[in-house]
Amino acid sequence: MSNLNITCPLCHNIQVNEINTHIRNIEDELYKMYECTTCQTHFLYPQPASQELEDYYDGKFREEVHTSNYYDDSKLMQTFLRFTPEANIRVDRIQNELAPNDDILEIGCSVGYFLKAVVDKVRKAYGTEWDTRARDYVNNYIKDERILVRQNPEDFNIKFDKIFMFHVLEHIADPIKFLTELKKLLKPNGKIYIEVPNVDDILVKTYQSQSFKNFYYKKAHIYNFNETGLKYIFDQSNFNYNITFIQRYDISNHLYWLANQKPGGNGYYKNILSEKVNEAYIKSLIDAKQTDTLFSIITEK
Image (cartoon, rainbow, N blue to C red; front, side, top):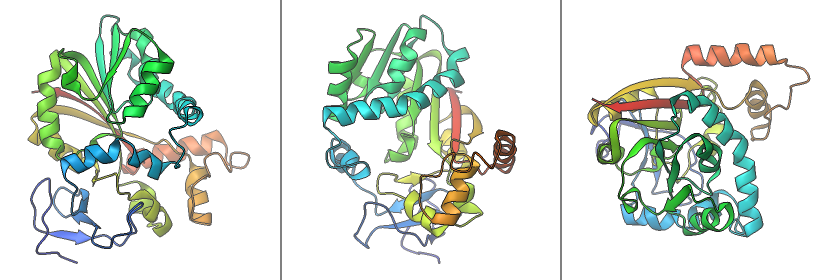
């Protein structure tokens, strides 16, 4: 269905189609998800104002996504421990890019699991986080003088060798302007590393799992990118880029979604489906560009 009064916020194309899906954490029927026919980005409309976003991420966001008692110290520690294994995987992915004298920045560092995982490989690890209580957790519990966390990047008043964003860009109201501004924070030959969900995820694009789509699209994700959408953003912000395809969840997870219409299936069928089967499945997803995640390394032109 074409919507003549709605244009893509990224490329300003007027040909957009409404997506038949529920949006998590939104009950107001005013909000819809649309797909741009040019840059292929899926976007929330109407979009929230910047100050509204900043206020939302300072508390309400994680209470909606997790639980109302998310900010109990024990819950924050559980979050730190839960995401540390994935933080280690991310460090392994980029460790050959790191140097002992690097000053690195993570934007949207949550409770600091990536900063803690990476700090021994660099000089200092800086982080920004809009969530006040998440920042406090890093400062009060990690207590590493090599790790510094503030609200915004400009609060440090320095430049960085590398900047990291893991599942952050989809939350940014104006990603082109945001990336353009980040150039000012890079040292010469600096790099930005960006991980985002891939809206061409096979559960969305090919399997057309309605239950997964109702789970996948959420209030916090203003944009949902595929490779085409990322390329558009990087071109418009004048970056060179390399985009690779990553699969975080296994074949069991996908079969579980299709069979039970809910999450929780990672590794569920591992006694039946061998690791070789899973590896072949993931290779097929990569070849088809229908993995769940995109990983980009961008540098200034």
